[in-house]
Every structure is written in structure tokens, then in C-alpha cells.
Length: 173
Image (cartoon, rainbow, N blue to C red; front, side, top):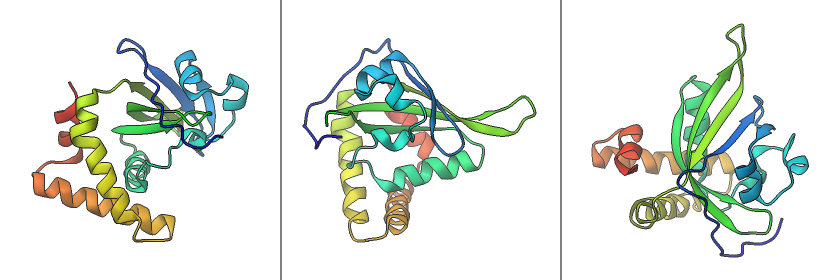
């Protein structure tokens, strides 16, 4: 994986990125849009951990919230910045849901991702994520980073008198 290029990749408002993972986050299925934006071949992605596309500017606290919600059997919408194989990046609004087998047992996760509004990124998400990362930077341990980032996010939401879902849906156009 290359260092960060600073180049943003985009995709159409009519396109969806789709992936499915097992319970440990290893990729089981991806669509062509995922392959195109990630910059890896399908063979490199299938079986790889989904974090292969994790961007270093993504706050730990957002992923902590995501995994906490999934562990409760709940879905989540989240703005995510991903990293392509060559160091480019792309923003998505992800909808991640638990998947169940025919017996009703949790079997993995499904994610559909849409393109995002640049104005929302500039005015809301980028400043919030930067502030979360600044709070997380005060800690060395990744678990402590995630806890601090999530606490910061919860404080912001409390001041806005909004739940996380209300905040996210207020941004979606």
C-alpha cells in the first residue's frame, strides 16, 4: 500500500459500493464499484480483512461505535474515508447491517455505500473527524483512542441534543 497521495476518487450518485464480510471482517463479496475505487484486484480483496482499505484519518471512535452497534444487532450509517491501494482516498456514506443465516444466527455483515455531499464533508464531517482525531491523539493505545474518540462524539451529540442517528440523517440530502 502506498503512502497518501492526497487525490480524491469519486463515484456516481447512482452507483453503490457493496461488500459482505464474515464475522471477523474478512471480505466474502465485493462489487465492481468497490474493486474500482479500492484499486486492488478482486483476488487481492476476497478473503482479506476489510480494514485493507482503512484510511489513517478515520477516527477510531467511529469504528468503535460501528462495532458496538453491530454487536447489538443494530445497523448503522456512518461517513467513512477509505484508502485506495495507491494512496488515493474516497468518502462514502456507509450503511452497515448484520447478516443472519437461515437459522437466525449472525453470520457476517453487509455494507452498501453511497457517494457523499462535498458540502456536508467540508462543513460537518471533516471538522468533526479532525477534532475526534485530535482527542484520540492524546492516547497511545488504540482501545483508549477509540474510547476517547467515541466519548468526544457523544459529547458533541449531547450538546446538539441529538442522537447519533438524528445527526447522521440530518446531514443526508
